[in-house]
Image 1 (cartoon, chains in turn yellow, green):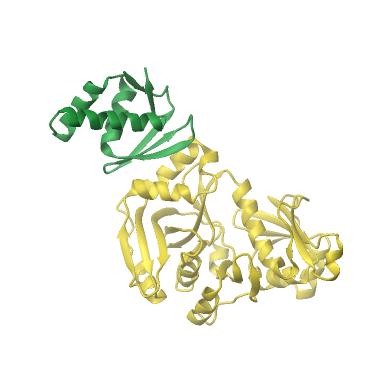
Image 2 (spheres, helix red, strand yellow):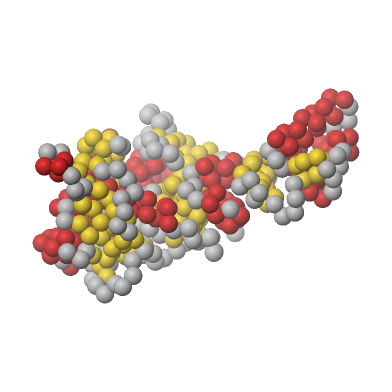
Length: 304
Length: 89
């Protein structure tokens, strides 16, 4: 049973009472909230995710609720709770759904240390994964959104999970986070893309989230191997250009983009080395999404 | 005399002529060129002095072993020392 099996009112009611258990990739999240904006976002963007009716376990128990102070009457706010504790300061109530997404990213990146976790988008085609590590502002999510609307499977928009035990990439397909100009760019690029309503004045500017194609969610248990590590960089007016990057340098840059590389110690080093061993590494500059799609379409996987 | 830091602390992988070294004592990861890596690998094997290391490096690089080369080798050793990958024995 998927979230879409519930009517809007049933979803709101369940969220407000005991909460719901949603499966996202290999994680089960127990979410409880009475905030309508979160229910709206879940109903729109999580419709195709499995809803677990008899769950007696969750990786993450999260809830969102207004702080118990007087501000609720004039400038309402929202707090994100993990295991009953708020790890972050409150945000304006209007940002409740983005806060859920950011909070869930934090849950994974701070807890799931059976994976080497890289701040990167990951997409897959033909059994080969392309890892796109990049700092904010590089156009990573825009490129990722375009790729998944042109036949690539989404493994993750934010968190590449490299399983330490075998080096495989474990999918975590969750809504793609778009910011500022990227929101309209993707809406124009793929008019059928489903986007949440825009939320303005967040710490990242204006944000909206794009719904993940149902096929990516249905295949969320299907792991794969990395074939490419590609550092994307949006540069206005630039022609699409792929430049080979020496693997040792790619290692250092991916390590800089990893959340728990240092925490994992030697295991992190070995997992990273395995990832780099298996991958062709590139810097990629682009400005036109169609050119980027064409470049990715002719990527050749490494010879085995 | 110089030697590599103790035991199994150093983990080394290389791609083409660049080396990545993980030091499990410090938790730091370093990118080394071929010359520095050659010295480190030598010192992992056995403790050695500057002159011996310079001669080995000169042979590898097919370079002339002169005062300038010796000085450059000393600088490489000092750099590896600063990274806490090698130490005086």
